[in-house]
Amino acid sequence: MSSDPAAARRIVVTGMGVVSPLGLTLDAFWNACVNRVSGVRPYEVGGSEPIPISCAAPVDLFTGDIADFGELEGTLKKDIRKSLKLMSREIQMGVASAQRALADALVHPGDLDPARTGVSYGSDYIITTIAEISEGVRSCLTESGFDASLWPSRGMTKMTPLWQLKFLTNMITSHLSILNQFRGPGCNVTNRESSICALIGEAVEIIRRGRTDVMVVGATGSRLHPLRIVSALRNESAVSGSDLPPEEQSRPYDPRRCGAVLGEGAAALVIEDLDHALKRGAPVYAEILGGANSAVLTPKPDPATGRYFEFESFENLEESMRLSLEQLQKKVGLPLEKVGHINAQGASTKISDAAESAAIRRVFGSAADTVPVTTIKGHTGNSGAGGDAADLIASILALKNGELFPILNNTDDDPACPILPVRTSGIPAGDSFIKTGIHPFGQTSALWVSRWKS
Image (cartoon, rainbow, N blue to C red; front, side, top):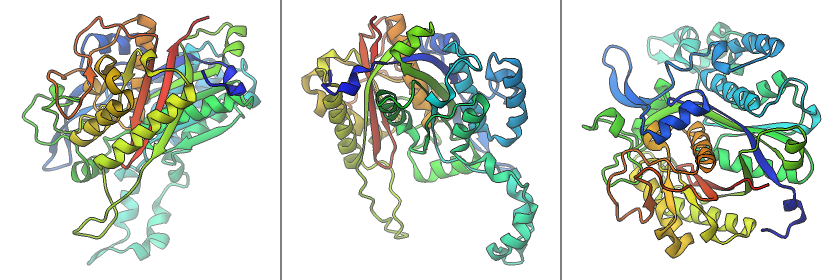
């Protein structure tokens, strides 16, 4: 372990909550993971000529009704219900997952010291709905099309006064802090899939420095807004026009993978100082040993437009992931042979999966032949920030239950992915795991989590 005196303060996970196409409870979520249940369904985007795609979304499970937020006490339930009109779907899912995590951690209103409890939440960027702006846009239309110069005088006046608050990414942290009266450090990042590991790594340091006792950390994301879908289909490696059934289209590390299936969801964890957790009788799921993150960004201009807009550069992603893993190993100070498994990004894209696998091989060396790799992306597709938070929770549950969940739809080895994917049930989870996260622009993060031993 690290010789840093602050590292002597042990940080543990005491509560978890999910909003996922696999379920809203930890039991339902875990059972779907181990029983190979897919959350991917057919989906159509558009009006008169809809675009058929596959997606993974908790549409029937999470409607934004107050009942979706779990067991809530009277005043808190009333306050959340009043706040719902100021929340986009992503924010609603984020708040719901965090409230479920707090309930799972046996936290009741007034239990925690407000000044020593903080909130850190990650997300994708959040886009306004078309319905919210349609009247304003129509008022700015002229014979030649949309006139942006008319927006201040005509368009903006058609918007509801609190419109923007529904779509600001920092409002998740804000709502959770206000609703629960937490006044400790607050943080928000929009690093998509790399958000959760980076945030938890920072939250661990905040607690170790003695600034707080408890941090609520999570991430949310939806890639199913019509504009987000169009952007993903045009600019990213998203599945489109596959002849495979929807439930077979997300294929992490498989040679037949043809892109990411889009999804949505959220997940949150309560992490706290071990002594504080034991004193209040909280359940303990696992121990966080440390986190690290890196970025290697060398954008290249699009030859057609000259704009700097690049997704999934193999060299960037491999180098960035390598740096994150090496930094993490140095910070935690344990040999990589101690890792029971790796919970990897597994976005199911040709470049990202190969780059991540290459980085794992470079850092782990021959140990990569024996350390199993898993991910829930075959079950849930890629929902951005929220998906990797749920992936993290799946591996913590694997530590608790002693076995790993198979990667759904991974059936064959790909020479471009020199790792050991989990394909069968009953493989031991080990005593610790590393979780990785990759933003396709080149930001990466990694987190080392251990089974808690008293």
